[in-house]
Length: 126
Image (cartoon, rainbow, N blue to C red; front, side):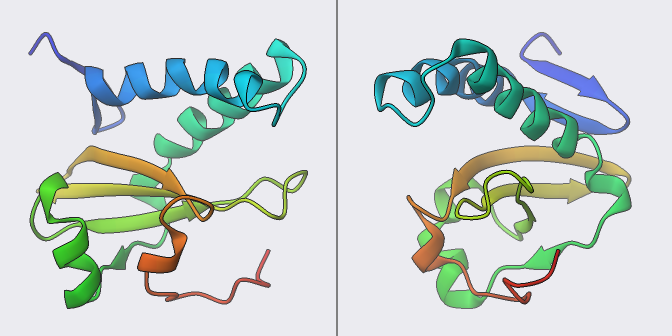
């Protein structure tokens, strides 16, 4: 398929890759980062984390949360990612699973959509 990047059974549609590429600019424009290298490092960290999805715990969405995010697919799972250097931001990666393949559907953070995601984990865990 042309519109998907694949590594370790994790499939990333082009739209998600474009979101991550645009994220660097967004972080700079909104003054979350003042240096392009740091913004790029965050995006690289998120992408590296995405490829670990087959090996880490997955969380199911609550029925209410599933309704909110159903435009990204049915039977979604999510994982969360937090950098040690940025304890105030948690990234959520939504995906669907087919056999041993994981298809990334949406990426967001607690500042944007966190209030809609059921906390299946302890925020203080590291």
